[in-house]
Length: 136
Length: 182
Image (cartoon, rainbow over all chains, first blue to last red):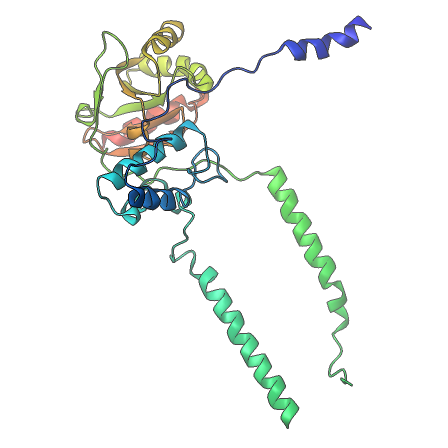
């Protein structure tokens, strides 16, 4: 009986190992820019950049330390007058398209953009045949 | 009333089942061989971005991109709070024993905690830079700790290893360093 209780009790006492840093967040990780127009540009960009360690969140949504460091970097660059798309380009240069939620047309992705157009064309063709047939 | 123009062929009856089987197959493949979540750096073949990090440990210099001259070096991205980094430490010590020059970048680390980590696990690093806001980490396309980069004598990134270097991967890393010498 005691033995049966031992494992659950041991599990209760177990403490998860801390695998995160204790550094305070980077200066602009949680602080907005003073200029509201700049902050709006930074926010719009941050919502379309993917967090590297929490892969279904944007860096605007994530509390991971590296996401905070990325927000800090985005805000500092916007403050320095850099174009948001240039910042996105800088990150894509390092992490690939993966890091951006705004899809680009590339050799790999063009079918995604072409397929709906193709389907529309096929639908138009079918409808025309059907309506032409109905009139005849 | 609409006249049925042409009856579907008999085999079409099996189409939904075939689609379902295909779907189940995809799910099984995804479960048995989960996709890799590593994000490879696109900076392989590119020179290190310019950076100069302050010293992370007392009595040891900090790290700048200008330190990567002469022979190829191993750049290890690590942190005292990262558990696999402690597991990797003996492997780095072994690489150092075999003549590899290793530099470290400590990510978001406190000086005292890093000193404790080095005292516990040994210190294979020639230099350690402190990257408190992951700035250099982002600039070289690294997305976690530990990661190791082989950097050649001209300061060009030649190889990225994501995750801790396992003991059986030591010969492979030595090969990459040799390759970078050419």
